Amino acid sequence: MATDLNHAMFIGHLGRDPETRYLPSGDAVTNFTIACNWKSKDKEGVECVRIVTFGKLAEICSEYLKKGAQVFISGRIQTRKYEKDGQEHYSTEIVAEKMQMLGGKGERPEPKERTEPRPSAQPEASKKGAGSFADMDDDIPF
Image (cartoon, rainbow, N blue to C red):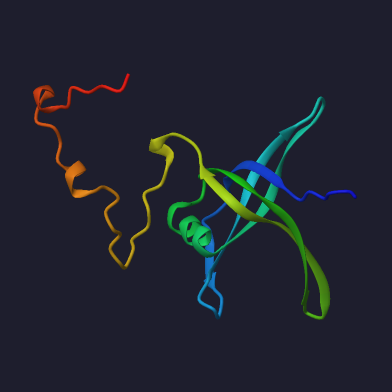
């Protein structure tokens, strides 16, 4: 019995800011396009790849990605059929399962304003810095 595989990976730069909308269920859907360079022996070019994200990943993409950002995308390829002005159209896109922001820290955008405060990622004890080397624990794990 043969096993099928539908998995695609891309690294590219966003062509414009992501667009987010919400389904009637309240789940986020974010769409964006990345430009991926390619090169063969005698040719080179750019391929624009449509990306769609859902749920929490869609919210993260909406908050942190902007035009020009370099990202790694991993997901599955999907072709949708839709009708517009009485004609059938097809759209091929990548349904992203993973997204990783790339580039240096200085190249990453600041997150967009949130309406609700984000909980602290550090416990209270770790927020206090050590006053000097003498205050540090002597048990070094290596």
